[in-house]
Image (cartoon, rainbow, N blue to C red):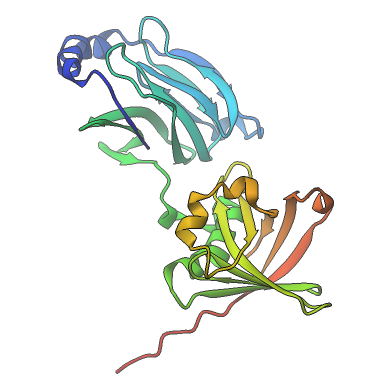
Amino acid sequence: MEAKTKGLTALVAFVLVSGALFCSCDVPVDRGVFNPTGVAEDKLVTVKISPNMDVSKVDNQPVYWKHPDNNYSQIVRMAPGIHVFEVSYNDGVTWTLQPISAVAKLASGNGYTISHIITDQNISIQIGTRKNGVEESALFNMNSLSEEDGPLAVYVLKVFNPTLVSTAGRVLLSNYDEEIMFEYDLVYRKTDKKTGKKTEGRYAIEMDFTLGGRIYFLEADLSALSSEAFLERDFRQEAEIIAVPVQCDGETVTYRYSRPESFADRADVYTIANLTPVPAFVD
């Protein structure tokens, strides 16, 4: 949520001179409605974009919410849920060097503001709502995931998280053709039930809640490729298989694929079994 800044020496003076103008003269520019999924009108939320801020993409879709020349704020109405915003800041003195990705969970019935905070040499993007006079952050927190957040959220809760939080974490996906064991440290092991062939490697999950997420499988010698080295590589390009968990209810998951091309028409359903050992109770 942060980016390096420039021109910080002039920032304090700029804020002192211009800050009061925003309070008395700011008439938000209406950017209309962003609602590609067709959510009911009465469920939409209002998002205010503070002055000097641009939003170039929402959920990977280009938008043109560029701050006007008079530096007024902007407002837009959009669907509730988890959204990824690409945000830039430029007040003419201080600016972000590139857009910053900010993920927020918006709830129907609330109004939100996209703003910024400057600390040391960084700009942090903030997205919040005000409840009972108290500002609450809407920035997405993995600990707040629930099944209401869609199939990817369920997948993360039931398949990914158990192997993330425990070195003994193991989750088995199984169907008629194969088994996939997910283990701690981004390890996967596959077994072809028909041929008995076993493969293993590293995997990564890209948690894009607007596109359904992607699981990248790269076959590798685990002793020669650490998880840190794997994540530093261009695994998105190198992965032999990219699976998308399009459905997940906690008991089963359905994968579709964006790689390889030969998998394009497949929809593989697996049962989910959490094999993580239960810690022994010590009296």
